[in-house]
Amino acid sequence: MTINDIKEELKEANQPVAKSLHHGKGFKVLIIGFRKGMILQKHKAHTKSKLTVLEGAVVYKEESRNVALTQYEEVEIPVEIMHAVEAVEDSLCILTQGE
Image 1 (cartoon, rainbow, N blue to C red):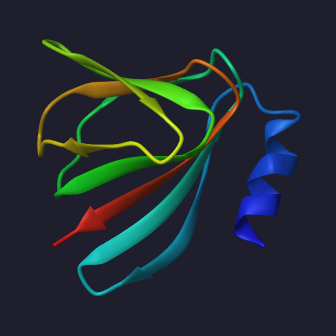
Image 2: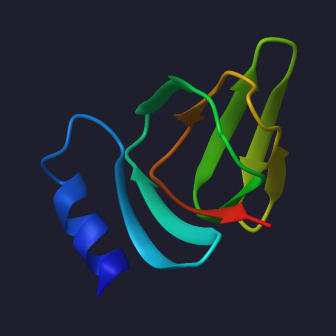
């Protein structure tokens, strides 16, 4: 169970825990778990992506905008734009990538 594995690993983790839930030709779905205060450091998405909060609350951060997200809210992530994600509380997110 991917989600249960992430929650278990988070108990000892110092950084967000991400695992593949499903992938195929031209797409992938990741689950990312955070404990409150954890930050997914700045990086770029190289393909069309969307972050959706399943549990908790996070802030999606780009240079020119911050988007606060709570349960079931989502944000489109622009391709090749530096961004980070910070957990406001213990959180579980789904990241979909691809066309």
